[in-house]
Each structure stands twice: as structure tokens, then as C-alpha cells.
Image (tube, rainbow, N blue to C red; front, side, top):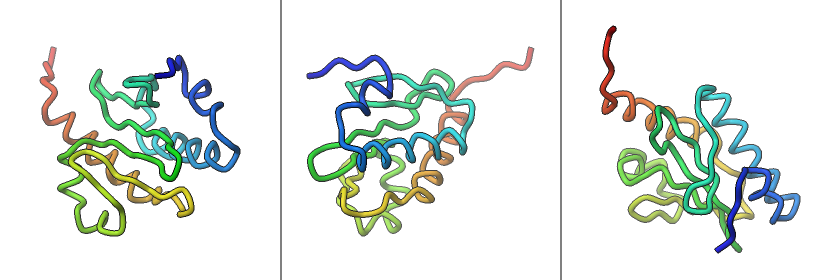
Length: 123
């Protein structure tokens, strides 16, 4: 398994078309939730929010995998019906456009879930 240190390092292993899709996912998530942090976890680009995993994404031979966790897959089941999904993953075929609006909704949902489960103190 490759060891990547940054999103750029990860992206550099793909062709221009794939890099463009990965960058668009990255840009749109950062626009949607500017306070996210970038890191590499499980050898994939990952966004964290309040020190918790918000979403992972990665490119494969025939698809881009989006990993928002099982709760988001269940919540957006109808909107994801055109994609292959599993317990916590969405597969977007490389020949298709990335559903950026749906990804933005999924990360907002994830942000809300994290905020609900994160204990805050009012000091």
C-alpha cells in the first residue's frame, strides 16, 4: 500500500481527468465546510471536522469511491439509487460526472451528525 502525505501526493498518481474530478470534490467540500482539515487516512484523502472523520474519497481503476459512513448511505439511499453502494461507500463510475451537489449535501449531513455527537462546553 502506498504511503501518501498530502492530497497532492495522492492525486499525482492519476491521469489529468481523474485529478480534475478529485480536485473538484476537494474544492467543493472545502467551499461547503471551510473549517474542514485535510489529511490522509487509510491511504486516502480524508476531511476531518472537529477531529472526527467527515468523509474519505479515493480513485480506483473504474470508479471514485466516496466514504461518508453507513449512516449517510442509509439517509441518502434514494438519491444514491443510481450508484453502487455498500455499508459505508459510494462508487461513482469514472465515465460519469461526479454528483457534487449530492456530495455537498452528504458532507453537510456529516457535519451536523458530528456536531450533534460532539460534546461542547460553554465556558
